Length: 173
Image (cartoon, rainbow, N blue to C red; front, side, top):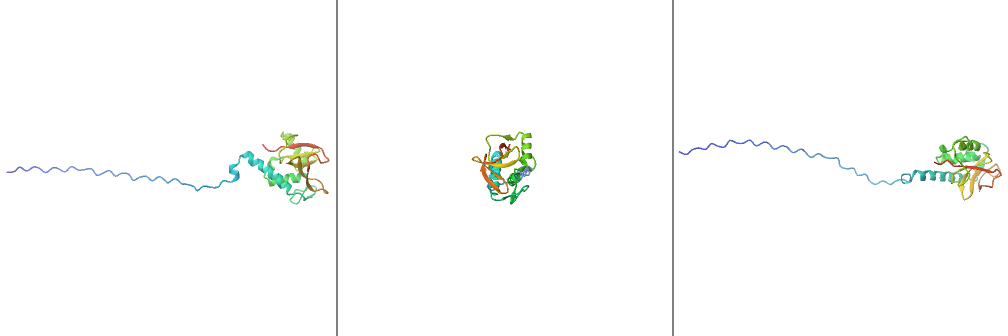
């Protein structure tokens, strides 16, 4: 009689370990290129220099406006009013201390070691007569200022005024 061989006991095959689902990393966000503004590409020093040039342009745009004692713009000025107006429009008024008068600006500048006698830069404040008059240096030996009721606002040479030149006020860092 044939011998019966026992059937092999089935070996339990372990269930396959589930492979973890691939973790999805958030895709890198690629921003479209943006155009950079001029202020992003210029150094701080260059941005400040451009503001002083803007103060010069603002003052030059006031040529022909009237001189009125104590006036601060926008259509009439006295000498310090023109300086303050141009600096404010150029967003650099915080750099010039003192009060409204040329004398107060000069006193502040002396206290903060901001006065110079040579090598002005465009946009520097120019003081005459120990604080009796203020102007803005526009370069090439010239200034712009609110002169008086008969001459109004005009460009003159640095030494063309009756009051003697006192100092340049250099307010930039």
